[in-house]
Structure formats: C-alpha cells, structure tokens
Amino acid sequence: MSMEFKDTCVRSLANGINAVNATVWIIECAPAKHRGRMAALQEVFMATGSLLCQTVGVPFSNDHYWPYIFMPPVLIAIFTTVLFCFTWESPQYIVTTEHDLEKFVPYIVSDHCRVDYLKARNALAFYHGQECSSAAIDAELKLCEESSVIKKGTTGNKNHKKSDDDEMRVECEHDGITVMFNIFKATDPLSRVIRYGAWIGVMVKVAYVFTGARCLRAYSTFVLHYLGHWTLSAALYGSFAIGLLRVPFTLIPVLLVDNVGRRPLIVISMVISLITQIAIMFFIEMGDNGKIGVLLSLCTLLMVNACGLGSVSRFYSAELVPRYLLLNSVAILTIFEGIMKIAVEFTFYPIANIIGGPSMLLFAVPTTLFVVFVWYLCPETCGRHVAEILNEIAITQGLKVNLKLSV
Image (cartoon, rainbow, N blue to C red; front, side, top):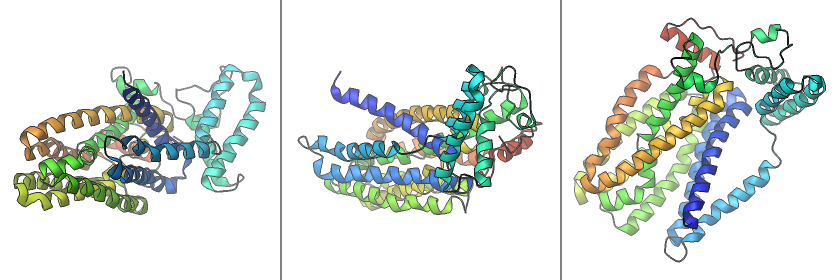
C-alpha cells in the first residue's frame, strides 16, 4: 500500500470528523440569531481553501512540483490547531459530561456541578460575547442541561426525584440510532416526528449532491476540456477563474440566510440548477459552437449553489432535530453524503466519456424530483426553535405531539 493512499485514507477520516464536528459545534455554541450566518461561513472558508489550493496547483501541476500543492493546507492545519488550543470546549459537551459523572459518582455531584457549570457558563459567554451573569447565558445554560437527557425518565441518578425542570425535558423513549433507523421499535409519535425531521435533512443533503455542483466542480477541467472543447490550458485557467468567483458568492448566504430564510435559498438554487444542467447538456451537444455556453452554464451552476443549497445544506439538517440527536443525525448525514458523492462521481466520469452531453441527465432527472419533494416537505427553520419546527411537522403528519421550547 503506497504512502499516498494511506495519507488519503487518514486525511479523509480527519475531514469526515471535522465535517461533523464543525456543524454540531456551531449549532451548540452560536447564538440563535447568528446561527445561520455562522453556519453559512463554512462554505466561505471551504471555497477559500479550495481556491488557495487551486492557486498553488496551477503552476505546480506537473510531475516534479506537485507535492508542494499540499503546503497551504499543512500551514492552515498547523495554525488552526494552535488556535483551538485557546478555544473553549462546547458548553453542551461540558454539561453532558457533568450529567454522565453524576450517574457514576453521585456523591461528588454538588461540588463538581458548581465547577463544571461555571466552566460551561464561561464558554457560553465566550461564544456569545456577553457577560457571564446575563439572562441570555442563563437561558442557554438551562437549554444545554435539559438537552443532556435523552431518555424518558432518565435523570442520571437512580435516587433523583423528578422536579419541575425535569418536566420540561425531552421525553423520548429511544436513543438516537433507534429513532432514526428502527421504524418497528420507535413507533411512538415523538420518535416518528423526530425521524421525519432527521430524514428531511438527509434528503436536502442528497439533493445537493445531485445538483452536480460538487461533482462538476471536481471535474471542471474535464468538463471544459473534454466535453466543452476548450484547450487544456484554457480549461485549467477557466477552472481557476470559477474557483475565484465562488468566494464572493459564498458570502451572499451569510448576509441573506437569516433575512430571506433557508427555504427560498434552497428552492431557488435547485430550480436554477435544473435549468443550467439542461443548458450544459444542450451546449455540449453543439460542439465547438457551444463552448462559451458550457463555460457560462457551468459557472452559473456552481455560483448559484455556492450561495444557495450548497451553503444551506451544511447546517439545515441540524436545525431539524433536538440537540440530543444532533451528533447522531449529522454523523449519519455525512456518511450518506459521502456514499452518494462517491457513487455520483464514479458514475459520472465514465458515462460522460461515453455519451457526452446526455450524461447531465444523471443530475437533471433527480433534481427535478427533489425540487418537488423540497417544495412540499421542507419546513422553514429561520429564526425558529426546533420544538416549533417539530410541532409543525407533527400537525402536518396528524400526530399528537406538543414539544416544549426547551427541546
């Protein structure tokens, strides 16, 4: 097994862990009013990092200098590692850890609770930019504590007496994995509502994969050169130019996502994606006369997803599930996304080599279906508590569920 292959496996594992951790961390730490903007910044940094590697890759894409392409990510990884040494842990994790310790060491809980909750309060003050004594920090700290209970009647201590605060906690009969996958066991109304929200989030992420934005971005040089009939040199610089343009476009959802909402950005970007997919297929079939059209259509497809579905899909699913299910749902979503991404990319390249333009139907047909599904199934999450969203889902599904705002 070559060193390059081993390195790719380790790097892919690290990227997968970071992809899950970043979304969960933002949802747990960012104030609700800034949650969308902060989550949308993931796409900004991703596009910037991709552009940086492309910038180095253009002059170094030869047999002798190609290892130097990895210098920018190495330097950034070192910088961020040092930066995280001075960053607070997630307050939700701090509170959940304290809750677990209460179960195993009940006789130290009073002393530990004071120290640990002070640590969580300081972490919240750091992330929210407020004083430790503010009412907003108290409310968020209570939310973290309530979200740490994931089973009905579970309080961490067998001798614990149920208080008024316990009545406000999430009352779910099953763990996250059971709720999401075991439809025969998790049949209670709450589990059904939570499962519906979680899989809606998965659907949105899969819908992004089938817009072709990620696949065509990876194969942009191939699309421009082999399918679009540009010269190899022109295709390389065209691909770089598209990467350069994507960066300012990724800032658009940062400004709009908490004002316009998630749902309009998702639907509009999917409709435009469908139009551009058909346009790319049409211009490819035109041969040399359609190469400008291929470039413009590809550019439009990538830009509209950078400021729409591509950005929103990174955090939309995390807004549809209670916090106690957040890690499970985001991890499972990332697995599904990775599987679908690999399947689509490995399918597109050989098909495009054989049939050319009609290979875009691989994206156009699923996108047509997903536009309909998203329009009818996806709720708006902007500025809304997860309990409100799940209560709305329960009403549409005819289920008797009424969640408290402390979910």
